Image (spheres, rainbow, N blue to C red):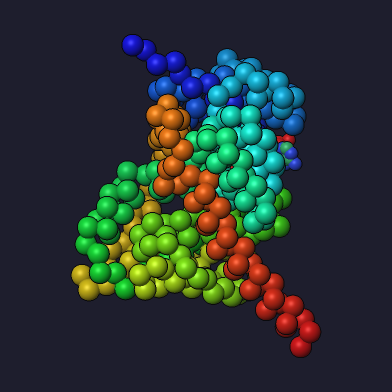
Length: 304
Ligand SMILES: NC(=O)c1ccc[n+]([C@@H]2O[C@H](COP(=O)([O-])OP(=O)(O)OC[C@H]3O[C@@H](n4cnc5c(N)ncnc54)[C@H](OP(=O)(O)O)[C@@H]3O)[C@@H](O)[C@H]2O)c1
């Protein structure tokens, strides 16, 4: 018996859609890349045309012809369309962060759970085979006291393709923060509290407490000089240190894995996945609490 491919539509026509989502949708078994929606009709036609998909400018018509949606738009744009798509029974391949407010993320999770659709958030490292092997070893060894991590990004540099408006507004906490919180959560257990402080420009430091007692730190920024940029994470404990292999990322293959897992979850009529919308919402809650603390501290300094 052959299984019909899941018909996917892509929301977004920008750099990330072009270099990662479109090629991954085209390369994934069990997935048909059927449609593209963009606010710019010419960009939608160009991207769709390259993959023999149908271009759309109208969201209703776009959603009518597909089973699932892959998102490559800013988080506030994503959450509005994704909430509507979930209500219409579409499965969701979401980008991080799932939303920029807790209320919007809660609304999305409610829509996903009421409709019983499957969802996966593309925390990219969580879909890399070498990082998965590292997480398996972390779990097998156990006894970890803590974790140390940093993502020093340079996306805010003039020539960087990720120098987009929402990143300039929200900074590293919301762009690369989700990746680090997701990784520390998966390696040391659910995050039970966060303490946050900001450094110069776009620098944020987080101290996380994990269920079970381990603690971890992460430093994130999008404003690092290219010479300083890079990322690292390790856990430490009685058996020593275990560093995450974060060096080489094949982003198309990682997204293809995420798409295949979403399709398999949907076909099995299951809804939960370790990186589903609920997990994305929970990571977002950590970021939102960190943002509140930073804003409060800044307001305090302004009054002093
Ligand atoms: N998982 C990962 O490792 C990873 C890596 C990179 C990016 N991402 C995620 O991918 C998403 C998009 O990436 P990006 O921010 O770099 O964007 P991008 O690739 O620059 O593309 C942005 C897209 O969103 C569209 N857009 C912008 N504002 C819009 C609005 N108000 N209404 C409708 N469409 C709008 C743009 O349309 P125009 O072309 O018309 O402006 C463009 O098609 C983000 O959520 C980001 O976090 C994830």
